[in-house]
Length: 238
Image (cartoon, rainbow, N blue to C red; front, side, top):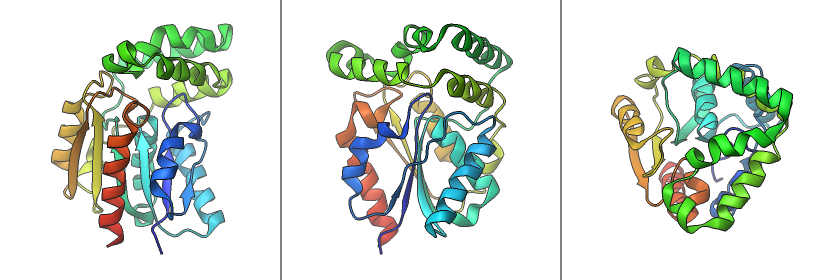
């Protein structure tokens, strides 16, 4: 039986961001939990485990992008025996600096006061790569709408959870399952150097750079992302 796959979305998006990936992994049982709005990343991870239990899944491959990657680290910290493998896309193991923490809390308060309209002007240009911003206006508009559609209260809660997330670097050398690290070559939030640093510490890992993509590499270059994902899943299933 093909291995189950859990897709963990980025902030402040919804599981809908994985639409192009679902068709790439036909045959695998899929779980796409909504992890926006938890007061801690541990809370989000616990929710994922409950959903797996409800399906009767003992193990899965976890695919997380950005915030989804942070939740993968919390899942590994809680129940590493549930992993067959992991895909860490456009994410990092390091915690926020005090300045980044303060900026997240400040943005959370603004969103609670003013709504999600404050979010795209501040973040759209960093969530997408230069190629997308210059050449893909339909994608830019799609991502803008996805940002605006996020629930303000849940977005604020997640911002505070992201701000206080722990340092996951000590976990890297303990990861004992195969890991695939994917990163957009134009990602300015979690750049390729960040992925390379993690890959150097995870024993059974490989890293691929997704061309012409920024932080949302699965949306910006789904063909390259899906090819890498399918190859990884076929290796694990062999």
